[in-house]
Every structure is written in structure tokens, then in C-alpha cells.
Length: 106
Image (cartoon, rainbow, N blue to C red):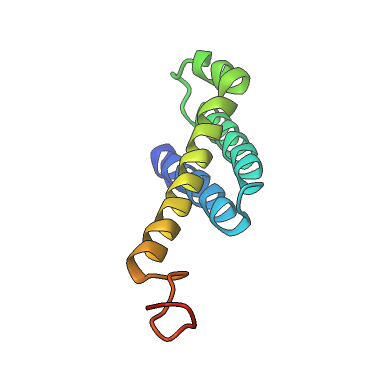
């Protein structure tokens, strides 16, 4: 397995695991998913730095300092998409709308 295949596997895990946490946990999952995403991408940078020797390390240091910001945005967008899909589902199928056979409805 080459370094690029290993990098692809780690990046896939770094996208799937935080998404699973955000979609299962709700609002608090944004913080924990962002923390996991940030940490997994730090590990991905270290693994790639160990396997590819002609790679610069400036982006790794930049990610360690400021990588939590795009991680928080990524998890926040996942949570917003989840809430938006729930709202569209409820609007489309009328969950919570008054039924015709309820008292007081005409």
C-alpha cells in the first residue's frame, strides 16, 4: 500500500467518523465531531509526513494552530443539513399539521 492510498483511507475516515457523530449526537456533536476531525487530520498529516519525505511541513503547523476552524465549519454544515432535511421532511409529509378528523378543524 502506497502513501497516497494510506492518505486516502485516513481522509475518508476523517470525513465519515465526525459526520456519524454529528448526525447521531445532535447539537453537542458539532463540538465533538470537530475535535475528532481536527485530530484525525493531524494524524493524517503526520502519517503522510512519515511516508513522503519531500513534503513541506508548513501546512501541518498551520493546521495544528487553525485547523479547528474549518473542522467546526464542516461539522456545523453537517448539522445544518441534517436539521434542514428534517424540516423539509416534516413540511413535505405534514408531520405536526392538523388532521381533518381532529376536533376544531374544518
